[in-house]
Structures are given as structure tokens and as C-alpha cells.
Image 1 (cartoon, one colour):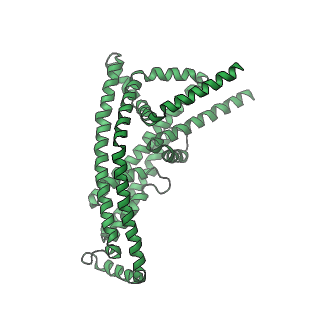
Image 2: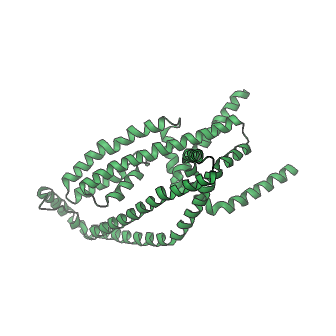
Image 3: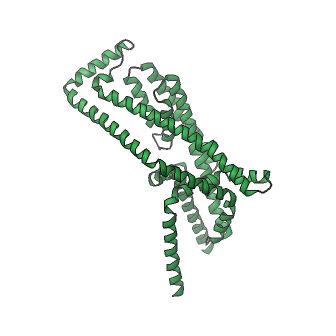
Length: 348
């Protein structure tokens, strides 16, 4: 009976503890993920500074601010500006109605003539088309207004979370390995099983970083290069969207560059549209099939398909943090199943 009461009390206290830490869930987990990735650098700094953990932690935390957070802030600012410009252009374009879809008659007379014939066939439906385009334009403006309000509202919260993350990161850099050893002792598993679980988590984290992020970065940079060469509007924004779309299974980066190709063709830039189409099919899309299997396959035994779905599910559940949490949860599940299977085989 006393064990039951102790168990219930422990669950109540654990639930209360989770409730206390819940508002800081995101900054703590971001700090934890960053500390795991930067742990080799942290260990190197400790050696160079002759074991002065506090100084090493401070310098590494300061480096995160200078080399990660500040550049990310500039990138987000530029992306936001280009997103607003792109949405504003799209709204003006939509408000012009079907006439705004016609290419330039001077540059592409044949394409213009073909478009004119198509518009003549759509003439009976012109009223409905204008209504649809007007609704899309209105929706775009309302979306921008809502996003602006949300951005202003969440700025203070974002800054506070950033501060909490940096404070947590400092202590994880300084005492994280000690925390980790204490947690390992609390786990109801053998030392071998604990090492198996932690090893699997490390493998998946490396796979996510070097497989997913680097592949997306490579595809985004390749796409950004052609966007800039062709003079595509909001090139930086589209390049980042292309990198993000690399995580979407099946369609991948085509989710971004296909509409961009269609936009160029509609605006009458026929040659640019064809060049972008060929380049993206032969280069941007092929980076994923060549680079990702090589990186992921060399670091983890988990099938790439399961990693993709865990990332997408994590994104839907936890937001951007889910890019890492999804695969971590997947790896923990696989590790526990493997441990259970080994115990069953051993007892059989």
C-alpha cells in the first residue's frame, strides 16, 4: 500500500513539475539540441582553457549569439521584407484580373496571340474569374494584416524565450555532461541498454542535421543561384522556401519551383521559365536523391521514409522544433522495441 501511495505521490509531483516547466518547453529544448550539437566544440574549449568550464560555456554561448542568432535575425528580417513585397505584388497582379495574366505582346507576340485566344474562350466566365481573383487578393491582404499583428504581439515573447534559451544553454555547456550522467543513472535500464538508447539518439540527430538540413541547404542554394541569375522577384525568400520544401516527401522542392516556373510563363518570360524548369528538374531535384541517401545512410539504420514522416509529424505537432523532436521520439521508440526484442530472445 505504501508503494502505491508513493507511486501516486510521485506521479502528482512529476505532473506538477511538468506544468511548471511547460511555459519554457521550447527554449529549454532548443538549448538542449544546440548543446548536443556543440558538445564537441565545448569539450575542445574546455581543454584549451585548462578545464575552466564556466569560461568555456560563456565563450561558446557568446559565439552562438554572434554566429547564429544575430545572422538569423538579419535573414528573418530580409525574408519578411521580401515576403511582404512578394505578397503585395501578388495582390496587385490578382486585382488586374484576367488581363494581368497576358504576356507582353512585344516580347512574345505568338504567345500573346495564343493567350488572347484562350482569354476569348474564357470570356463568358470573366465575371466569375474576376470574383475569384478579387477574393484571393482580399485574402492576401487580410493574411498580411493578421501576420503583422501576430508578429508584433509575439516579439516580446520571442525575446524572452531567446533569453531563457541562452541562460539554459550556458548551464548546459557548463554542467550538461554531469546532468546527462545523472539522468543515465535514473533510467530503469542496464548500462548496455542505456548506451544503446543514447547512441541511437546521437545517430538520428546527426542524420537529421547532415541529411535533412544540409540537403535542404544545398537545394536552397542551388535554387537561389538560378533565381538570382534569372532575376526572379523575392529570390532570397523563394530560396529559403525551396530549402524548407525539401523536407516534404514526394513533391519536395517542386512545391516552390513549379509555381515559380508557371509565374514566369504567365508573365511572358518564356525563355526564363523554360531555363528554370530544366535547371530545377536536372539539378535541384537531383540533389535530394544523390546527397540525402548518402548522408543519412551512412549515419543511421532508420529508413529515410520513416525519418521524413517523423519530421513532418514533428513539424505539425511541435512547429520548427519538431524537425528534431520527431526523429528523436522515433529513435527512442525503435531503441525500446529493440531492447524489448533482445530481452524476449534472451529469456526464450
